Length: 295
Image (cartoon, rainbow, N blue to C red; front, side, top):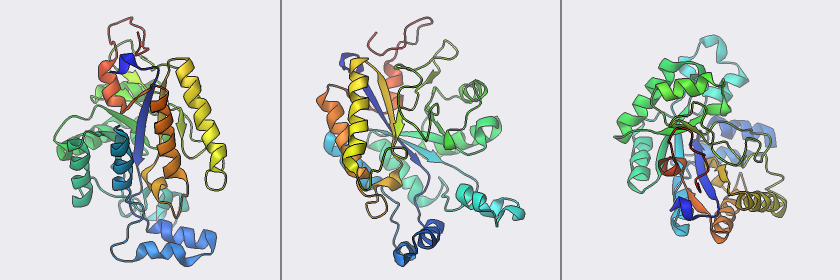
């Protein structure tokens, strides 16, 4: 149970790129290396890493949350945006949650004990109708309720986005944080902005800002180890984000093993490890209650 733990580690994955198509062309031009073009061969999907993540977590006896993105497709954007690099970054290589392979993995994750959550699209943080529609579409495929998630690019208007999320039926948000830094900048416990059951789980660290994982993994490990020790010392709730494509060793060496090592160390330190939705259920939501899970 979460209340018996020394601290709490919430595991999350923002599912953004499962296909490496535009990325294959971009990587070839960036690195001047045609190896990226192998991703364009039929039957080759190097960023489809669900099985890798599930295998690691299953082996360690833990579960996580996968936040699925239902982003607009570039072909549905205004024609004037089709030549914009920014538009390709936001809307290229996107999937639909109703694609048969995606719908199948959503149901497999759910049946296996993983949390399926919402990764609100780039503009949805200020568009309630769009966010409601995305949540409804994901729930129709899941066959159940979505209780939380994270906004794409960590987009937030505080507190307007949280009010909107609560209004469409979400119970928690995990967007408060940074893609450039790491640490407990927003405290050691979840936040309750409206003094009710809606909870904010601040993001402690994502893989992107960790130092030089590919060439000096021990340096990145020292950062992770220090954060885990800080979490234990303060009885904290620590939330981590690892995008599934970072488990593709050829493009992102050492990230998968670092993720495993982080979980192993957390368990050694006596942490509860799991998805935010499960921890949300164990929090005391009584008005005026302290938010620390150990309380």
